[in-house]
Image 1 (cartoon, rainbow, N blue to C red):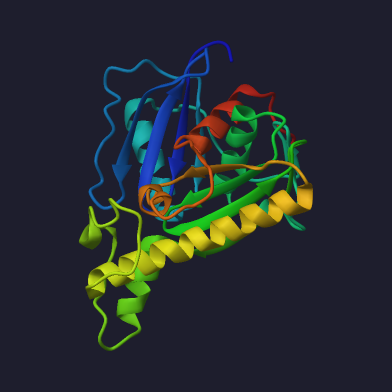
Image 2 (cartoon, rainbow, N blue to C red):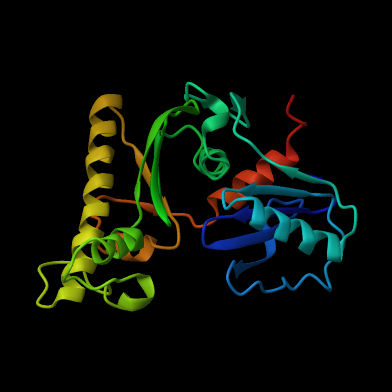
Length: 259
């Protein structure tokens, strides 16, 4: 990377994460804000970046909010909202309709492939949804899976059963400090059951990839609910919580992609 820093923004379903991608590849300064509280990022003392590169899976309202924040601090700053495409930054998209792939998953794969070049990867991201991406050592994305996230699983149980409570991550804070197991109360049973369901999905697909590819597959985990699922995992993993921002930095530094 060279020249002025680039502002990279990862707008997910719960939070907006941002960072300045520096010339040496570091992501500093950086921060996050929740959609609900509409906080203003601490950008007042920061110099103008070369531009903004944005992954947004949270809809038009969040896109407008991000535009307003940027415009208030750096009027007219060039910005690019990224989309998945057939090939970019060493990743080849295996989707039948490449642009249908979520921009966060696309940027995350680019970030993971750059962080662990030449390795077959299973990327597991634990957020509102849990997503899995299988990426060969040559950067070919062969396909993925999407499941309800840990918190969404818990909440849906309460919303669709008569006698179970509606739980989310805030209601079970600290409950997953130890490895989930059989619980002696309803809250613990729901929390552990959903965490183990997440872990079981990841472990099965990780084993299948190892068997299919006949090579050790690196399991890379990230996301806001990673702590809860990690406690249940029985497969070796590498934690990387900046995959999307790192991928956006790579996209920003690369030559412009043809439209």
